[in-house]
Image 1: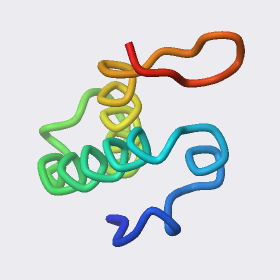
Image 2: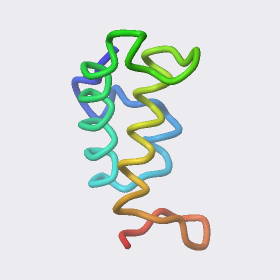
Image 3: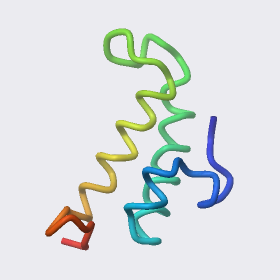
Length: 74
């Protein structure tokens, strides 16, 4: 299900990512949720939610990287 607010994000996202990265995650997840509604658009047996989470993490990793245990902008 899409996320309406940053507070609705999974704890693993809220507790580890800075606010800007959380915003990226939320927007990417919601976009992927809509884009991959049709199972034929997804790879393998991945669920709609699993696919959206993968896309969201990839979007975060495009702008952020983990250094010394913290996510920082590239």
